[in-house]
Amino acid sequence: MNDLATKLSKLGACGEAIAYANTMPDLASAWTACRRGNWMEWLLNKLDAWPAGAFADFAAKRATLYADYAAKRATLEADYEAKLADMLRSIVPTVVWSGLAGRHR
Image 1 (cartoon, one colour):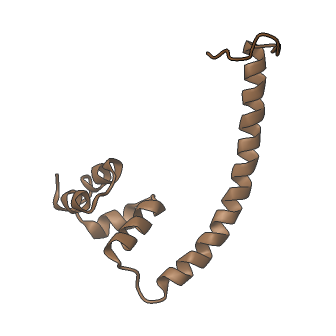
Image 2 (image 1 turned 45 degrees about the vertical axis):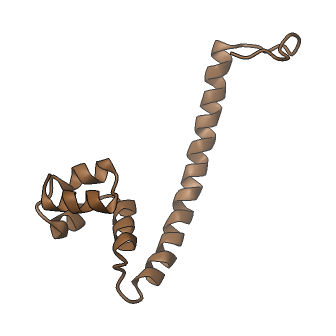
């Protein structure tokens, strides 16, 4: 395990982040290449390393980004639920209430 991975492990980073860090030569390289904003946010919080004013700017921009993705996610979830219902109906075409009381898988 390289130095960065070791430090992240001691901070309590997840295994996936530690594995990623182990492929990087240093923190600057890892930060520049990282595609996981949640890891980056975690590290800033864990190290209490937010530059002055940066967290407020981040929070405002994150709220806008989240709202956009929440709307997209709602559409995807609705589509998933509809397809799940169709799939279940193809397996179990009908359900009858009688005799189901107290019955489990």
